[in-house]
Length: 137
Image 1 (cartoon, rainbow, N blue to C red):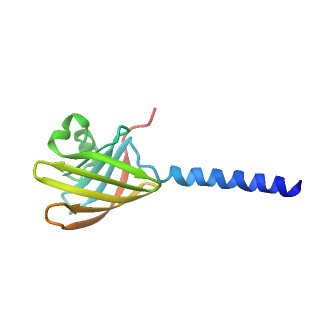
Image 2: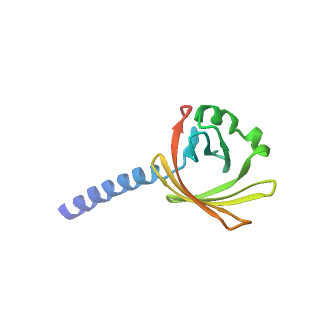
Image 3: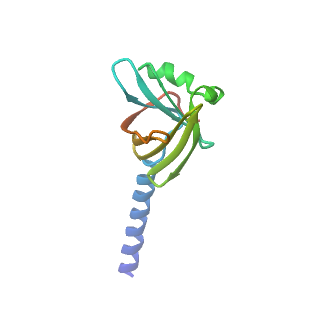
């Protein structure tokens, strides 16, 4: 009987810690992810619950970039669908003649992303930091 109680307690703790760990692996929808390119320019990613991801470069003010990164403007920037499995995600985004393949890992408020230009084959690896802009309802 003691073994059964111990096993039940152990499994409960394991499942709670696993679900909390997975929660830290989800992309966030109420803000924007930013990686600096230089002192005047940054690149941004914004994810939406419907599977859309937007990607653009802009000034380093994340609040102004967030206001621009909306689905109504998706025809003015790189956009596509993202897919997430556990802590990893991938997406193909495009705009005009530009096509990028994104692959990354979610680690809490940080994204580690490799961006590959599908035409030239060039790759850029960046760490994106999350900036909260609105509270989830």
